[in-house]
Image (cartoon, rainbow, N blue to C red; front, side, top):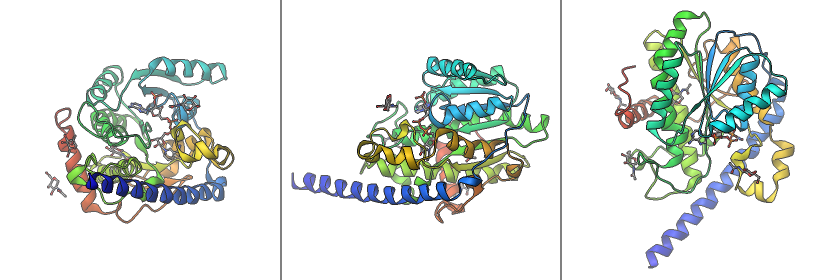
Length: 338
Ligand SMILES: NC(=O)c1ccc[n+]([C@@H]2O[C@H](COP(=O)([O-])OP(=O)(O)OC[C@H]3O[C@@H](n4cnc5c(N)ncnc54)[C@H](OP(=O)(O)O)[C@@H]3O)[C@@H](O)[C@H]2O)c1
Ligand SMILES: *[C@@H]1O[C@H](CO)[C@@H](O)[C@H](O)[C@H]1NC(C)=O
Ligand SMILES: *[C@@H]1O[C@H](CO)[C@@H](O)[C@H](O)[C@H]1NC(C)=O
Ligand SMILES: *[C@@H]1O[C@H](CO)[C@@H](O)[C@H](O)[C@H]1NC(C)=O
Ligand SMILES: *[C@@H]1O[C@H](CO)[C@@H](O)[C@H](O)[C@H]1NC(C)=O
């Protein structure tokens, strides 16, 4: 009884600590966005015949990414849970006057490794190559939930699902390397929230023993960042020109913030100081198409220029450990020898 109260008390205390750190970090990130606003630009140029995938492309930052890639005359494949919503979004884009490019929709639920695997096989059946993969879908501050594969949901959606997806699509990206002169790119939408993450808890990756949703989000985003660096290293070693880049899109006013304190108490903060989804997408699309990111693999971008990530995220040993660890978790779906 006493222990239980003690546990709840410690949990609440830690949660408050995380929330405070998040708001400090968020404030810093907003200042970065405002200060460097003039750098957050991308020149949309024709990339006809290029094929791109955007996960979570039907809403938020994702839908603006889709729009911009279509304006580059690409064929964009949207992976999302609700395919009807995505089709409606495409229709809206056409009505808004986006005439270029093509868009199609395939069902993808990153909570399920089986769904990821099905999405990849459908894509691989329909397309011979893939130039750009944007791992954008994400969830934030979710109460503890276990996926059908037995993982904490933020770890599963933000990180592990994308880890598997990326590996299943790599052969198609190698093919794009052979056919095009520009380097294929994998762009992961991580977050400055990775700075909040304590060291990765490999012994309890789902955080079942002591769950704090804010910590789990930060961990999933640092995993994505570290994985990017490990994969980029492996691809370079294998002689590939595929670039793996991570990007923090900025503090963007989207439904991601539903349920957070700031949205409840002072939503105007996000409206006034936050980026619009278009501005957030600009930071992402820059990494996808700008000439300057042709060799930018392994970097972490914010507002269209490379920035530092935490020292821990840069630790090669831990990156490799995470890579091996994750490989083990998906081996039922993918035997990966990169
Ligand atoms: N907003 C920010 O300030 C901010 C800051 C840093 C990083 N980010 C990152 O930016 C990315 C996009 O965020 P956002 O702000 O655009 O959020 P959002 O508006 O909430 O959109 C999230 C997207 O993720 C998709 N998604 C969620 N769960 C999924 C699942 N299980 N399977 C497949 N797709 C799923 C959703 O697709 P459905 O429509 O199918 O549900 C939706 O398109 C996220 O990775 C987020 O962590 C955002
Ligand atoms: C949590 O993560 C591990 C990986 O270390 C996994 O094998 C396990 O089944 C997961 N689920 C739970 C509920 O612990
Ligand atoms: C993106 O994240 C996935 C895992 O979620 C990883 O396999 C891939 O290497 C990462 N790529 C980049 C560019 O960060
Ligand atoms: C977020 O909140 C808005 C406004 O209350 C609502 O319309 C929307 O459906 C919510 N989205 C999610 C993903 O919960
Ligand atoms: C990861 O696995 C590879 C090959 O199995 C092994 O050589 C390497 O030492 C491992 N790295 C870590 C950090 O565990």
